Length: 306
Image (cartoon, rainbow, N blue to C red; front, side):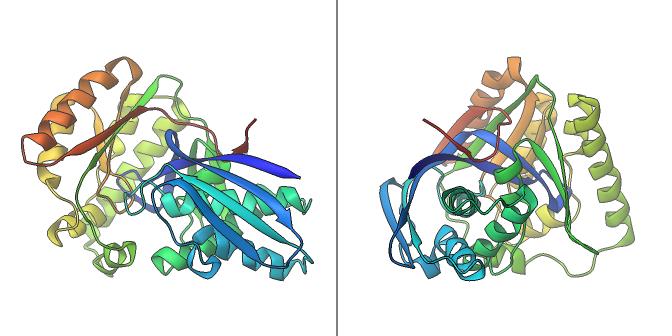
């Protein structure tokens, strides 16, 4: 039995929702081919696209698959052949896409019958390899699709909602090296002023309500963070942060750093995506950056394709 899977890029945080909010995107995406093999191990081959580790212990998907083989006492292994369309280190959940595809594939190939929540748990283990922490805000939307909210205390809960049908997304990925996701997490403050806490609770509430009410104005109003993004900007991880936020105001769009960056996600009506894309292109190029653009929208989670 062979499977061909499509695993989506994801945008985490969306401003104030650090380690809680996530959104699956139609583009970019990975294609992963998976099949059972007789030996009890994991084989990884990168067929095309961006390079990623092929040692299973160093690959987010390979690590997740190894843990599933061990936990369920499987007598066979799995081969993963990856077409890597999501750039690693971009802030678009590249590592999460591989991990989600691997967890989904092992579940299907061996008829384990795991729930979506259980798949998220295994995919999150893969994030230990890339980020040093099993954070769920990318792997959860990669499994569930659409918009998700993750709560891990006192126990894991994942809430999934469909975004407004007219919600458009533009992703701008400047050609800069942000460093590791570990580094991006290290610069986050461990204590925050009460004023910043109140600000983020208010904005996150408005954003989540906007998703539920299908109100794009509320969503873009909510995409403003007073804690994590400013700290990363001060550390030099997010180039041109203040300027791109001002551009969002000029466009009447919601703009936030996607995950740990350097990608920036712009939320706007589908009919105005091209206007936003052109403005973002001009913004980065005028400052000397090459930029890759994705004109896209929210999408489904990992799934078997033809």
